[in-house]
Image 1 (cartoon, one colour):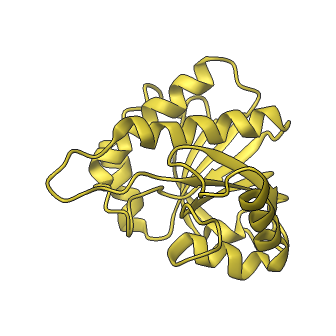
Image 2 (cartoon, rainbow, N blue to C red):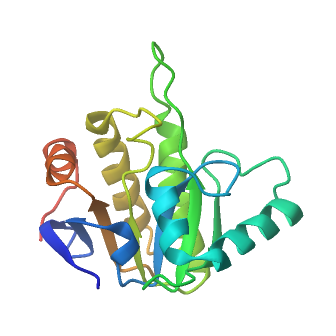
Length: 189
């Protein structure tokens, strides 16, 4: 359980780029690239719901009923139990959908990472694993996402967050290599 391959680390070892399965990460919290319905779906979202079990879906239904009856807005983040996952919790966030012919919404993508990290910090969670939000079915070009993600994470870490271990988890090594080619972290190691 928790098998992954570290490909690089940045910001004094606080950020690790890994190839692995997000559902197997043994961290305090993993992030789900959710859809606004919060009821499961394909890709990362479907895998997290399938492996985490019905406790996650039940918590998502309650969030929809009590807080977001029209769906979770893009860039917002909510917390549920991790169910049967190795991670104790799941943060669900909705990334921006890229419309063909329009610029990707970097501010909304940054909000997903910033709000997820803020929620983790508020809950006293110190380790977090992110998938590549919006770069799959939502069409965000990975080479454009990498600088947004790395700049946002570096900014949050510089602000003094108590979150001190961040994993960026890529299912394929090719996707991880694309991120590494386009990231803008200022220090390695």
